[in-house]
Length: 251
Image 1 (spheres, rainbow, N blue to C red):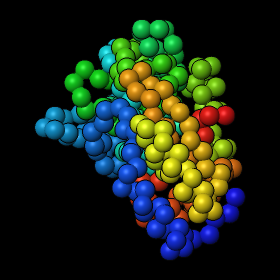
Image 2 (cartoon, one colour):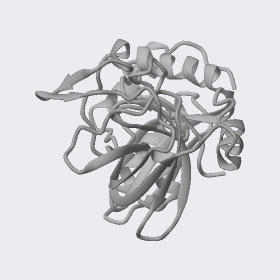
Image 3 (cartoon, helix red, strand yellow):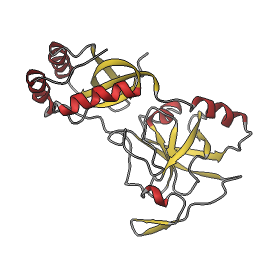
Image 4 (cartoon, one colour):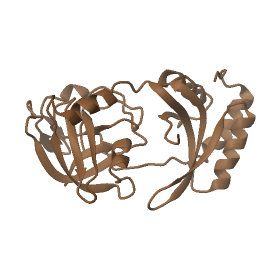
């Protein structure tokens, strides 16, 4: 799909909905330390944290949380771009790149994540999962869950399998989310207006969470993250500053 830069008509149509568009904010998050502090001691909210140089044999129990919007696309403490559709996580002291097995103690479901960020800086929480990882252990709705985490050694089968699945997040199936509404008619109205401005395909998808139902509006299908980001920039330049590229999860 090829989209040309927004015309005045297109920009006006998008701007008309920009003020009304809602964002679905998930998880609990605080600001991580700068990238240069990932292996050095750092201070957050008056408390010092000391990253460990060797994670072998590391185990920990406590509560996990997860984070999604508006951190998707922003830089993590490691310098990577945060992708909420990848299996990554934030931890206060584990070395960057560490692979961790996370077990939800409520349902015994497990996932393997790679540490690429710092946090969570909330009492009682030991790890902050990406949205995708949280979905794998069924903690999206509750927001938090009691977990056990264990570092996986390089030769561990689950780590080797996870390392392969973490290989390439830049190719696949992507789209642009431009809005999320609690009322279906608002989402459908945005879909119709954006489609009339020659942005296609435009879809409305119903999403059910434990505490709410909302309708998200998404534009286009792209085989690479780079192409999706190009269209994201067109929408932002046209005035829709909250547009963001995501991996499609409705396949």
